[in-house]
Length: 347
Image (tube, rainbow, N blue to C red):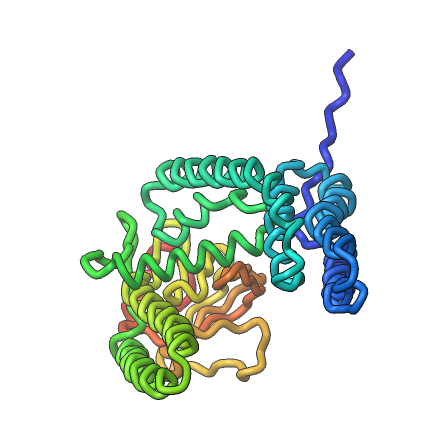
């Protein structure tokens, strides 16, 4: 007789709407209470507000999120720390006396959060090293951060930002990623896509300095805050531009890997490709939901027709099903010949 398999409850990856709605309602009510005449007259009311935000809200999180999903209870610690920050924003300066006592509980909680972060960072580093040696940086970062965050959406955002930061700051001596045995085909040289994006980056840098000087005359703090946001945008654009140069379209022994920098990635096995067209190809309308366009606004020079939909992965965890792909290739004839030679696809 064999033992019955143990069935574990899946951990919820979506943020429960019930908890979000209740938490927002509680914060709104506590905000009004903290500014009422009763709160000014009785010190017990600020104490109650402090307890509600630092203990009651985390308890709701455990009841509505952690317990139903069977998730690790340690995640409540993060909600408690956020509750301390939220209480400081809700309470007025003269009402934060009891918040100091709540912080005594926050000390071990902060240590627990730090230990959690250290464990996750070490796990991510091991995942990055263990990733396939033939994988490119975005895929290795995604593999390293898989499961590192309680919510998949947070992991996708963090992985995207890390990838763009890497390309903006650390890729200048890096050669384009072309695995051994693969043929690479660029799509940015004849279309002028990189030149266009570089001009946008230059304009953004000029705008950053001009805006900083103008706003600084009225509010230095606002000027520096806006400059920080603009600088982040410049880094994002530079990273995106570098990814276009370093991630060409690939024709491998197994299929075609369509890459638009880090914007979209689509792996298509040869069995999924119905035919390839080159030259003055006709593309579907701009509103075609199952069409993927690679290469900016230049006229496409190659078209892939799939005999079944394939999933394309995009920035921040986006995905879409694709049946046709148009690409503004620099060498479309060589691309079609490579696909025909390796996969026997009609071209």
